[in-house]
Length: 208
Image (cartoon, rainbow, N blue to C red):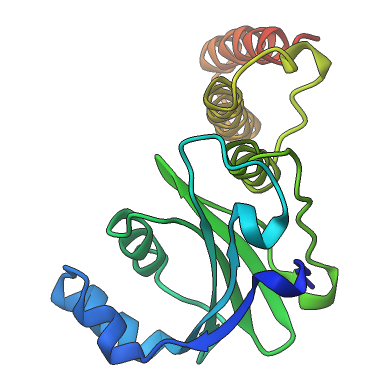
């Protein structure tokens, strides 16, 4: 379970209707907001005074919102709209019964995999909120092992590289499926050649 200092605890229930009325939502997303979400709670306010860290930096506070669901799935456009239309940096704890996942928005929505709430972990790294927020992005957004060669890259560059790797892996998996069912030798050879080229590119991206 997520644990932050006692000084950071807020624990304030945010009335759902008042919350979503402040957002500009399509009718479909508004209906999903009502049907999917049971409760929203502001769990923590992470700020220099609640974490005993430096006040330097652009970020003044990070709010941790828990989103309790009515069912074991949701429309993630809800989270995107909340994050994009809020001036604060937001960290989401999405919950259904004893299961949960973490999410945040950084150019797009990133989420961890679902798992037991008790097993969710997020480390606070850094002496100012800018560094802590970047650490949250890295822990939630980076699902691929990019290797030590990427240590010098910025978080944006790491995420871009991850997206490239995931796209290549998806293309390779698709070509492998096509290759297995292709009966024409010429076409199979073309698929084989494409596969080898993609695998070479993937190895280069991973620094292998």
